[in-house]
Amino acid sequence: MQQTQNDLYAEGGTEVWVSSTRAYRAASEAQWEGRRRTTMSSNGFAPSSISQYRGNYSTAPSLYYNTPIAPPPTQAKYRRSRRYAAIFLNLVSVAHVAMFVVALLLNKWTLVDLSINPLLGPGIDALEKIGATSSLKMSDRYQYWRLATSPFLGAGILHVAANISVIYTFGMFLATALDVLHLVLLYVMSGLAAVTVSANIGDTFITAAGSGPAFGYIGGSIALLLLRRRHFVNHLLSWALVTFSLAVNAFIGATPFVDNSGNTAGLVSGALGAAGMLLLKQRVLDTVCGERLLRVAAAVLLSLAAVIPILGIIGLNAGTPLGSCCDVWVCAPTPWWDCGAAQVWPSTCSLSASTSSRLSITCPRGEVYPLPASVGAGTNITASTLNALCVTYCTLKGYVPPSSADSPAASPGSHTALL
Image 1 (cartoon, rainbow, N blue to C red):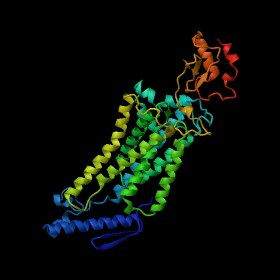
Image 2 (image 1 turned 30 degrees about the vertical axis):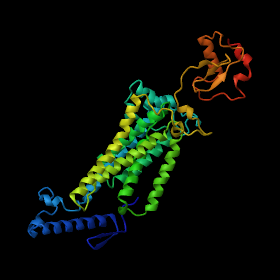
Image 3 (image 1 turned 90 degrees about the vertical axis):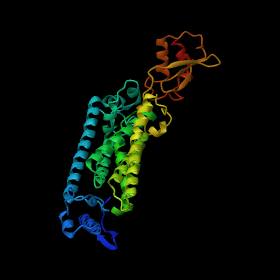
Image 4 (image 1 turned 180 degrees about the vertical axis):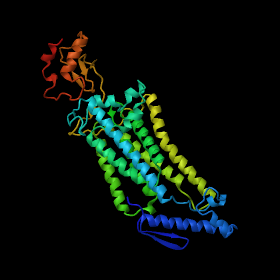
């Protein structure tokens, strides 16, 4: 995503060949100054008065501001804005690394099995303690501080590395058109959208939303490439990089402890927010009416970006109406990892009786196994006996359900002895 090079512009019948960023800015300043002089001359300003306002925007008459092209930023201001953006993105990168190091500390500096966390990271307990997204903790225990911690948290070494690379790369690209305050606002909006949507859709999952802002910056870059497409060359290479980044990070989002529903919310929020910010900075060559329409469009886009986290918080307090509707979207089940490792399950089993008066036991993960025929509905089963049956038929954490070969139902006598 290279800044404009060898881009052809036609302004007022004069074609200007731009061969570099510096030449582009110099040509843009010359064109703007020519427009200013032409407009002021046509409105009766003397040549001497025109010259005295050159570069002095604060004392120029109101007509000076109504020239069709806004004054381009100086090179010094542009470099200063890029420097502030780099400082902010470096601080964000340090925060991501620091959060992950603390998570490893809570996990006693160990990495869990790859089948549980294929991203080379800690398990569910450490991530939950450090501030991962947890619908139960946010809705029932009002731990809304997780809205601030989860957008800086990575689920593993691979997740942290991918987030930092995407945030810095696309953040510096956005800094060519947006100020550092816009980057901060874009990070906050996409991060909040990712956390709140993830808490509503993946209500049984513990997830790290550090990739939400990363997807937000990708969405913002897409908006910039679309709205300012004349300012860039090598469009095929730019879109190839965007597509590759989306594909790699979507694959990471399909693993346990990451959530592609939150990533999607961050992408949409970032695209809407960046589009609104770019429209606010854009000027029109038309009338005052066109300028107002541009402002209205920008306000609508920014409002839509802000509505996503607001609706998410409302959904949390309303009992997460979308909960468990799209678990495959949150974590894609494959033979390589267990999505259940990132889910919070009940800690006990329950019994139920069928129409044939035969009891069945329901495991924490929802698996149902029939008890031996000798265990009827009238059998007195104490709490300790139920716990023993639960341990026998399914693990309490529910990570690995028993296979048919090892199923206790195949040897009912062993379970009858528990009663």
